[in-house]
Image (tube, rainbow, N blue to C red; front, side, top):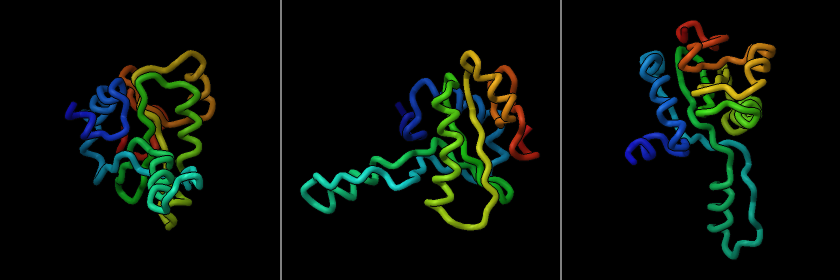
Length: 148
């Protein structure tokens, strides 16, 4: 139960994958933010008070699993025990929403940390040169020289 509080929003099956990744790469990061909310959310005008409407909108915002800071780079990481098309869509969308939510001049990259890769996804990862880590392969297409 403690791991669920340590990594808010991660599914229980994703936590061992993330901890295995961190066991090899945690020392590279200056800081890690979890459950980072981005986007506008989905307003609920049907709620009776402004406070409830604000809370509902905030709770409906998209959530990035981990935002890692290292050497002048912000790295968005999607964590999943089984990598499929959903995670690929999130990885493509989150940088756009992150920049809109947190404007500024910074280098932004993204990466997937996965326990396993579903059928056909490996072809997409390599075809698009998408940075990813699995226990079997390690890091492929590293988004930063310190991550090997």
